[in-house]
Image 1: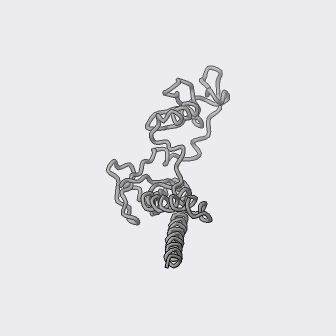
Image 2: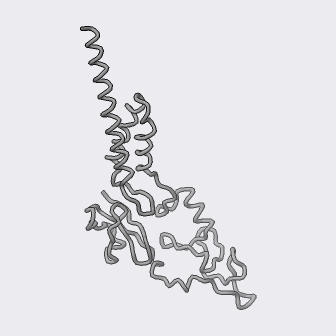
Length: 203
């Protein structure tokens, strides 16, 4: 199973599953590389701008009236042109995505229309979902019959799914599994006691 890596800094990229660092020589390989920490196949896609000096991002001011200015910052000199809408962009507004230069407005529109595959605007937090399914019906028996098994299914099937872009542990999955197992065990015990009392009553 291939998983995406997340960036933690200019030169520090880690596996999205176990946070094990991925060496620079394994970046931008189509076939990916096997993570040394969790043994999953990790595919790291890094834009060339990661090595760009931060000082070069500041836009240059206009020196003459004949110079082209940025559409969003009229006082800044244009450094490139948006390949979607044709607007002039300063170095601050120039976004390099999939080897193309686009403006912030076109980038936002592309993300909303799901045209930019490398952009991931949202993620499903499966660990939070599993924890909710395991804890909300805790005081009620019959809803737990459905929610607890579903919580265990999420824990098993989504254990290695990409989580938040912020590093986090598997503690929610673990707590959800413990709650679900406790609920199922309690339900089995209650059913057993009900059957036992019923049999005694008939005897």
